[in-house]
Structures are given as structure tokens and as C-alpha cells.
Length: 308
Ligand code: PMP
Image (cartoon, rainbow, N blue to C red; front, side, top):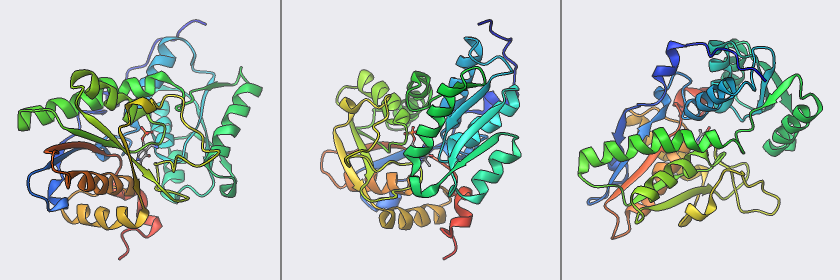
């Protein structure tokens, strides 16, 4: 397969290098500082810009995408928005398989970028959208290149090379030392695996805490793992996880509203991660925690999250 020349887009330079913010005051605990990257300022509004750009560029460079073949993947929303945005910017046609109950602003934003949407039955759950994308890709290999964010190694590598480095550099520059703990959620496992691996390689004493919704349907972007039949993402390196901390939507939402009143307008998974970080911060030996604020609160307006 011959590679087509990779088109330049000035948008790509705006991905990552996001502000590092201190969110520890949300815990009202003295003695532990909590830092997070504000991912909602990426052009696509979420942390998914980082892996999506990396996966797209790799597929263009290796000739899997040639301007004719469509990029195909499943997404619950944020990755879909990033695929649609950068596909449009780079001249790559995009098809996304998305559960039909994804929020209105997500679906409309994907449509606005010109991507093709295939909506699946919400009652079948998200794993069904993944299976549907896999089926389409295997039935029509000339039409589709299956990006497969759950198995694509470029996904975690994007976080290893960017998110993890930004967190470490920013925290060490501010406090003089690396974080004791990294708190992450798991969607594809890209953030946890990439950042967790980077931190543990550089500072083996760093502990990785996975915040996991313990009830269905979970928290937008985070998988409720651990039940029989749950699909464990291929790129998730479970050996990096030192502790699994259950989080509930009713814990995430008040934290989300608290963050909004502190000037950080972020989505429910950010609330869940900061809540989890605050739980960990209550432990004696923890002085500094790193996490991420995965997306903008703008994305949840139609869900009523901000209505009260
Ligand atoms: N939070 C939100 C809002 C997300 O959309 C995602 C990605 N699905 C995540 C967290 C988890 O990121 P990852 O795919 O890297 O595990």
C-alpha cells in the first residue's frame, strides 16, 4: 500500500500542552496537593484528541488510509468528535458506530464535521457498537480501515509521550518532586496505560489508582469493569493498577458542580476522578496526586447536569 502525502493542519499543533491546574482545594484536605491536566481545551474538547491524532497520523504514514478508504471506529462520543474533526482537517473520510443514546450535542457535532454516523440500539449497550464496527470492517475491508481504539497501540503511546510527560514535568516544576499517585479512569485504557507506564518507568514508587464505576450504565467515558462478560480493552495493562476504587455518579456530580464553581467547567468523568483523588488524598502517606480532567462540561448541557 503506497502512503499518500500527509496533509498539514495547523490544528494538530494545538493538541496537548494543556494547562496543569491544581484541584486539591476541592478535597479540603491539608497536606496533599492534587494536580490535573485540563483536557477540555483541546480543539476537539477532550483528552481523546491526543490518541486520535496519533492513530490517524500513523495510519496515514503507513498507507492504511489513502484518502479513499474510510476510517471506521466505534465511540461513545468524545473519540468520535475527535475522529470527525481531524478526519475533516486531514481529508480522511470517517464512519463512526455510536450508540443511539449518545447526547445530542455529541451527535450533532460529529455530523457537523461531515462524518458518517451509524447509530446502534441503545438497549444493546456500548459493547454492541464495538462488535458492529468490527463486523463492518471484516465484511468490507476495501471500504473501511478499522482504527480500533481499544487495540491500537498508538492510543496508549500518545499518552506515554504527551499526557504523562506533561503531568510529570508540570508537577515536578511546581513541587520539586513526582506525584505519589496517578488516578485514572478506564474507557479504552489508553490514558491509564500510557501515563501509568511513563510514571512507573520513571518513578517505580508511583501508585496507579483506577476509578471504576460500580453500577450500570456507569459514568460517560468510563467503563464499569469487573462484571462477568465485560470487555477488557486489549491495550489496558492491568498489571499497572495498584488499586481499584469504585466511583458512583452521585459522587461524581457534586464534585463536578464544585469544580465548575471553582472555574473548571468539566464533565462527569473529571468529577469522578477528582472525587477518587480526594479519597486517596485522605491517606497519610500521600502528598501529591496527578490526574486528568478528560472533557469540557459543555458536552453535558442537554443531560441536565448543569440545570440545578
Ligand atoms: N473520560 C471521558 C469523558 C472519556 O470520553 C474517556 C474516553 N472514553 C475517558 C474518560 C477514558 O479515557 P481512555 O479511553 O484513555 O481510557
